Amino acid sequence: MKRTILIFLALIPGIIRLQAQNATLRGQVSDSEGGALVGATVKIQNSQKGATTDDEGQYTIANLTAGTYQVTASYVGYASMTREVKVSVGQSTTLDFALEGGVIYGDQVVISGSKRPEKITESPATIVTVSALQIEEYAGNPAELLARQKGVDYFRLVLLHLL
Image (cartoon, helix red, strand yellow):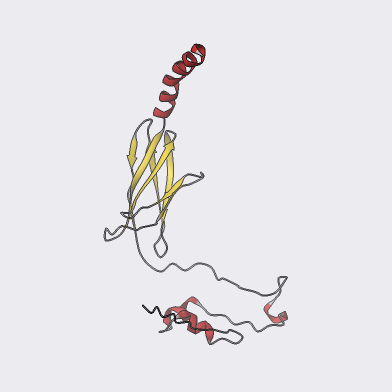
């Protein structure tokens, strides 16, 4: 029993030193006007480490080894930002992000009911394309724009809460 306690006591300084070799990265993600972006994602590239921001736009990524990292912050509807940061042993480094808002268009999304890839001209079903520009210029709900297409059934459901 005494031997086990002595071994445990001998290991404590090593464990403390190992914990002291870790670094922490913290900061805030906000929009260009300084408003906190709640739920923004902050990720260290080429690793599994990352965090999401809290109610005040703050994030913390702990247990990093000392070194230089590429860190990316992203939020839906905002342009992602990547910055380089150097963290040191036993230090807490601050890295803030101010993301620019705006509409970001990605690639075209194709939804198909076929079991295999096929050309548009060989498809037995009707194919309709709705562009990002059409959606942007449509005055109503974008779902209603899709409802105007052949073969699409759209139901608007209204729920009332009665006391």
